[in-house]
Figure 1: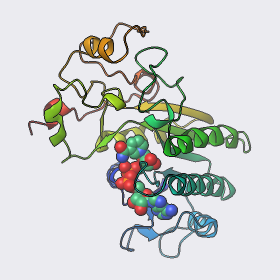
Figure 2 (figure 1 turned 180 degrees about the vertical axis):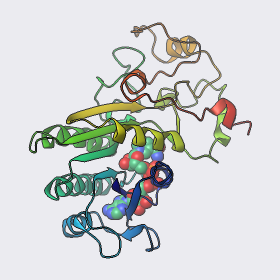
Figure 3 (figure 1 turned 60 degrees about the horizontal axis):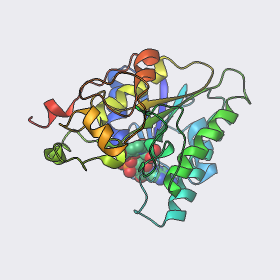
Length: 281
Ligand SMILES: NC(=O)c1ccc[n+]([C@@H]2O[C@H](COP(=O)([O-])OP(=O)(O)OC[C@H]3O[C@@H](n4cnc5c(N)ncnc54)[C@H](O)[C@@H]3O)[C@@H](O)[C@H]2O)c1
């Protein structure tokens, strides 16, 4: 396929471009940051004209796309004022999703977030592990992610055969970013993330699988490692963080409190990079 990846210069974008090229696809990166050259075009995705034009074609780069992977965003609150985070991310996601559909592209995979499902979990979830049924935003970044999911669920109804997949990532860890796991025995470590993490290369694997399994409609999948980022047993952590919250299944000794059962079942997603191996390495 000929695939555009927005946010291609970012943490997840770089891993995703590598993965999709290794899968045999032609990939065009689209990002505000980066050096233009083969396989990359600089685009301000907040400008609808630039988005639509670059999805329709770019001289010497492509003349039509089969799919769009949308990863561009300001990835956390605090980098810019809260309203600016919301304005950038909502505008960019509308431009990319609506522009893609207007350009006739029917397959979109994009990054949602654990912030669409209750991060930082000041309130206990209804049950553990937390699955895709949970939807709650507590800041403007998360609000954007919740609204993007609502938007995508409507957009798929407008053109027959449209597939939009939201991948709800937990905190994405760079391959050289495992130093903080030295705190794995600290019961406060990753509390706001339900203890979860995912390696950027596994985040890219989830994109690859979502493209392979794309079917008409809107789907949401949690994306996290199957194990928690803590060396404390999950039952102990769950009782400490969320006393009285029921478990919907028997949890494994170090099973993540962010459920990836759906991605495992429907996409065949199996994270390959676990902190217990990566930290020592
Ligand atoms: N990093 C995480 O822990 C994490 C967790 C959950 C979800 N996500 C989501 O995953 C996606 C990728 O995150 P990341 O960690 O790679 O972030 P990143 O900041 O490393 O990369 C994001 C990229 O988007 C680009 N971008 C932002 N606004 C743009 C605009 N208006 N026009 C063009 N390019 C623009 C930036 O230049 C950057 O290169 C985002 O949607 C983010 O919200 C990330």
